[in-house]
Length: 470
Image (cartoon, rainbow, N blue to C red; front, side, top):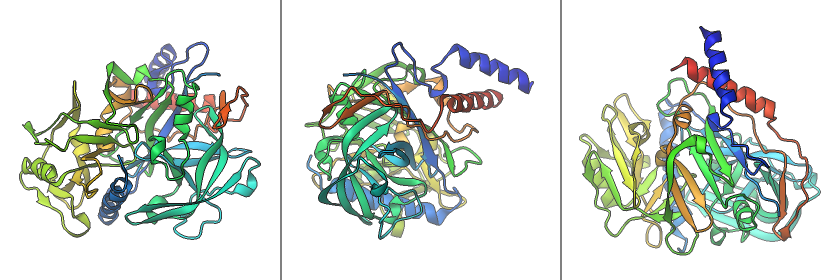
């Protein structure tokens, strides 16, 4: 029976190279994707989960509160899911020779930074960047400080060769960090890859993705993101397969129907769009005058105005406003199934009840994913994070500047909670090289951290296990 299931799945895999988030392979190859992985602390560690919720609340305020509002290709990179759906990271390579690092993939910020080998405070145990070991390092001698609610990231700005998903950018500006908040040092993450727009960058450098999109390095000037769900899976381990980021193309195996795009609000800075309606338990929530929403892969939950958040939990009997570390959050009976729907100007998008639950804090009480924003005036009304994004295939488009959503395919849905090995870091052999000082047609053959054979074995194993669990 097991052998039959395996060979049935093998035959299905060979019939469709797009299956299980593998990139399409047109001729010539025009795309890359990057796997996303997830870090998972124990879901039973209530104290840790409460502290993580508090850190998220505090840092969100600082993240948004001070802000004013050649050769082409495609590529992919598999992602890791971190902290029971609380964070997602992927792999980049920096330097010559290149060294791979795990970084949070954050569409809510624009800076790339890594922890330095000379780190002084809050350093953690993750791999650090050593400029002395790279021949392409250049110190720009510019101080860098990014202030967060629970600490600061401080260091200096430098330039390096950066690779991701088969693309290489020379003289990419980034931060080399010597002091950082402990909230950023969860092993094995070494830093952050900001995927928003250049005006937000504290380093004053053009983000990696924007250099590629604006310079014509991508077949299509956009990137797509699919995130997995393990919050309702039993036996989830520290690291789990997290999905994929597709660079320069959209992966048609991961969504059905068409992609619905929504124009950004104002000059592109954040990925900020208008939200038309929000419905909870079948009741429309009043969001009049407070409807702008930032789409942020670097935020776990969903932050909103206090009046709207109170109205959401008023639809859930037994809900209570949190106190102390949980101030701004609400608890509610875990036995309640909560249905949420979003509309941004066309289709209505449902959020799984499993994603409404951030974590359990007692035998009967759960923390809800919606919490009160403390951003204040000048910031967005809503910050919509992974709790919603796990339910759609998301697309971030350079021109016209917009965010798109599409319904997940059965292939994508089947990856939720799957019992499979965490994907190896995948950077991709460089097929497109460019420079912030101008395009370069020189392509190198840098070795990938994840070989095609290892990726094939990973997807075959995943497919076999998924088939057996049907």
